[in-house]
Image 1: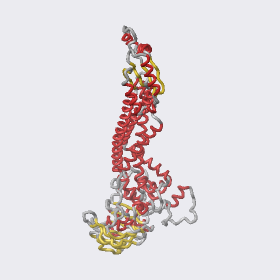
Image 2: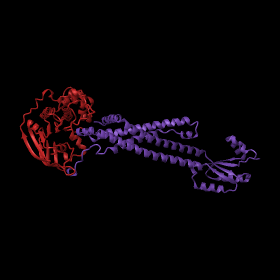
Image 3: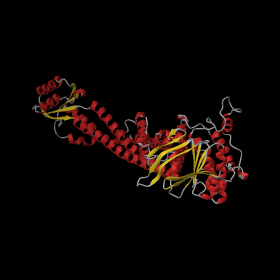
Image 4: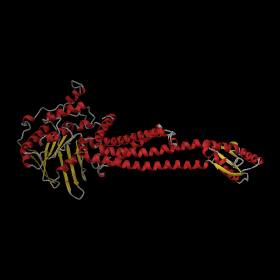
Length: 274
Length: 310
């Protein structure tokens, strides 16, 4: 769950990023965040994953006040949040596998597990066959799917997407959108920032509208786009636990192993120490 | 990630960075190597010189020359004065004949100079060995001064004068080496700092992604610290190798040259060499630490004071 209490963010120079915003996004909800350029969409997202700090107000993410989070704890917050950007932010000199496996690598998982998790996550976005390709060898849509895979590898509780379809043509945008819908269906809270009203109207769901930092609209829209008609690229959901079990040599789940999507996944959880 | 896993990860990433930016890394490594090599040379030379001084000090003497034609009672009196002094270990009387013989043996080409004088022209003398632990005694200086005024004494040759000068040279060399080494090492630190800042800039996209996915500061900074450390150690290793090679070359020439034989008395000690490598590593680490400020790594801002609730 994400909660904003009277959150204001002003940048040096006086520019208002967000002004007195109060709202609540329940766990598992999909929310569109819309508004013109400079309305405060990116600021809103940055405040959630603690890239920025508010000037006033409090932000609770899963009950944790991220506004007062000390530096040392930020990484553990971020392991529970996936972020996708408009420009993909893939590392061109790294392969798809290397781009996707940053978090498992950072967590010190062995190479085999890294490979397994990356493969399973890439399978989810329909790119398991491009693991060894470099980003420049992929289309825009494929690059964005790699970025989504990178954000999903730890099965985050929250997925933030900042104009993820901004650089894609309408067909690819829909493909990515369907992917996000599938992810949301799996219980991930999803905040999708876009200024594309047509796209929002096709999908429906909750829409938050920002204007010069102020929350000017919060409405539910009916939509038509279904997550399941994604075509040949939609794939089976990934089982991270099975991947980790397989990598560690265990063939059956141990007693008390939590179900997929619950805490205690294949990749160590947010509390995992480096 | 366990500590050993982290070290392995840092080392792997640092090696990749070093190989990718090998040209600038090489420059930094060479700067460290040259500065440590020069500092090492000065330290080894000054240490050798100090050893030589100490050895010669043990062998050096004071020679009290008597007036030509001085009578036996005067010689006896001087010998007694010398023997009575507490800092005198032993004395040896050298007659004009013995002095002449020694001169002829030492300088055969100049032996003619002593011919035709009728009697031996060189004065009789006493060679006095001193207790070197008491040679800086002020009373000894007064005693020597008094001895110089004795009518039977023509002059006193004190080996300690030039030994003191040699000691001063060793001290200056040591100081010079330390200052030069420190200046060059500071340059190397600056150089490593620039190289690592440049590397961090080149990899800023990757650092941003690591930060985004939840890498800790330790994991982000670790590879850069390791890079500095490795550059320093490699530089130190090169300096030590060059020092050993230079020393062995000097040793090979020691038979031909007096200076070489003086400088090659002692080889650099294991601890000294280890210190040089360690200094290199320390310089590299300092360079890395000073280069990685928060802004360099795009660290997120701290929580505002108002928001921190204990």
